[in-house]
Length: 188
Image 1 (cartoon, rainbow, N blue to C red):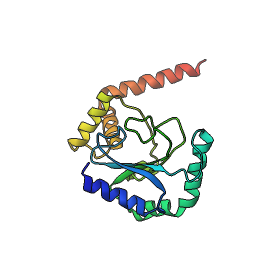
Image 2: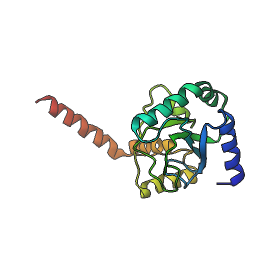
Image 3: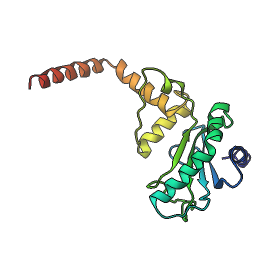
Image 4: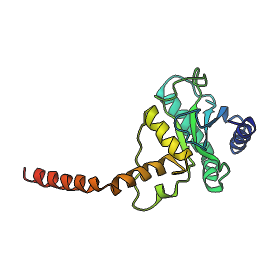
């Protein structure tokens, strides 16, 4: 990640909220986090605890609720105004000892994500959102298809791949077999 771009994104995010909201802002590029797609930028921001103790699930929830209450208008403006057009998502984490350390486990406690990715088809009527976890080899395959220009996002790659399956003549046989199994089950 280019330092000038990283610094600019962090400064824009910080400027959207009151001073001291974040203890640390990490701008992530492809390869920094498995959820960052090729060509994307994402942000991991650690929320100042503002007097809330660290230690329990409820303590983290209190930090998130206080942030959301105090920052509702700023969050809405981020979405509405497109202040961070290059940012796909922002992961907000209540700061606590060890969470900012490189390689820290960043799950298993309350956090808040703002999705800013604009994959239009995902919001279209009749589309279903599906989340999956891919292993390193499958993720590398998907990302190679993006890099090659087959699609621009991982969601588009998945739609493209499923479309190729649907075009295969063997898929008609799969559909027929599924219909037969459904009819067989109905007999019981």
